[in-house]
Image (cartoon, rainbow, N blue to C red):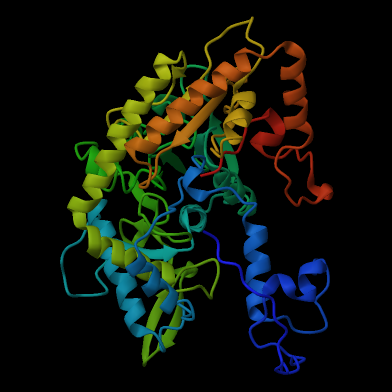
Length: 504
């Protein structure tokens, strides 16, 4: 039975509403009916609750980070470490005098990570020991790579000048599948790029071809531990051994941005790091498989002789000089603290368990995609990163390509990009799924089911509909701010060859 209520008029007088509401209902304010400022600052303030809600509403249009399988960057950390990082957001890491304990924490991280890379050390208490490896934190592997290239260039220039030889034409040897930050570093620091080009069957550097490109102006060779496209480990030992066999004095920098926190735990027998004589520097990302939110990276040199003193600046705090080698100055301390938490929280066993889980799930996903007819071009079983790179089989009757499939999966929320491979790869199209810490087996099976549905949907379409989808992708894509003055550049590998620069 429903109770009937009698309608009455109140005899009490309601207090007059205040002109200023301390806790406004967001959608009852005038701001809900006005456009947010985009090009000029507003003249007056807005209530904090309103600003937070309006920005949160707009950000809801972003993709779900957990479904973004294009990126290697960490999307999960425990609540405890997030609280620590939030508390440290106001700390300027470079201010060693005010935050000396944070500087000590960085040093601990450097030592712990260096141990994974077999960094040489004499275990001496002497801080001036010329034998010990050195390292520092960066805002990511891009900065770390630039510091590594700058050190190689300056060292090469100093040697050339000491010999009375020309030092104006440095070059670096690398795979054409390098991440775009290598192209940036070479261009910014006036270093000629000498590429070992991929083929439609080989996606990593060929050691012999790389060493063949070395000449008197070569500052070093870049070898990648986990390529961006296929996740494969390049043969660092093969390059090292050839250089020794030919008695060539050329250093190797290992770009271990993605693989540096994977290989030591999944494939500890692989020799790629400072165990090799010619490896003089290594970069590694903390915000990828180091399991920290962006951005933090690390770079190491096997001994001080490989980091020229002319690049170092000393900052005085508490009466002592602190050596600094960075491209920027101020940066937050939160990510370094986050890295320290993860190293303590997980230890070697925790990292090993996570990387082994991801490797197992990646192998399972590769098998499932192969059953659906895809050609797998990545390696499983710990021979590469925990990712799956794949492509559709050749079929002249098929109306859709990898880009249309990526678009179809996007409608379910999955961000799985399609790419055009590195130059000289016959314009090979491919897709890539990156497995991160939070990619469980259950989510993997959900993804496989969505692949099946997407394929069925595309196969049922006629040519006219597929063409409409392709046109839509080319015309619209993802709406992003872009300066039209800088479109159609022709200086990068992407501009010259159509190679995609993948997200990493």
